[in-house]
Length: 81
Image 1 (cartoon, rainbow, N blue to C red):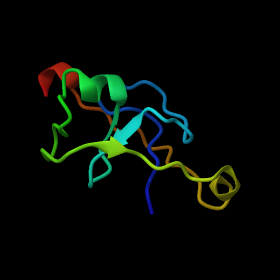
Image 2 (spheres, rainbow, N blue to C red):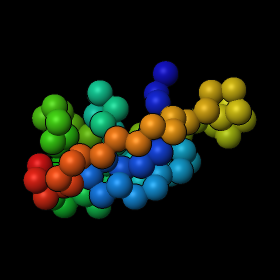
Image 3 (cartoon, rainbow, N blue to C red):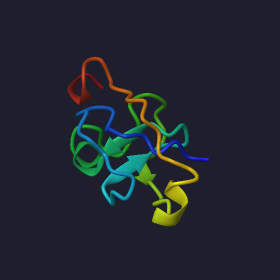
């Protein structure tokens, strides 16, 4: 099951579970669309894989299967990717 991380890994902006801007790789590294389209040029800086739109968990399922609260942040941000 997806973690639904609470922030973007490069810019560390807050990320609500229902966001349409969240992009993930197959390892669930999570980035915003602006970073993906800009500095990351569509590739995950951690694994080199492609980034796709993260699915949205239906609101009714969030109570039983909540989003993660663990924040993951690239120490040097996107520009160091």
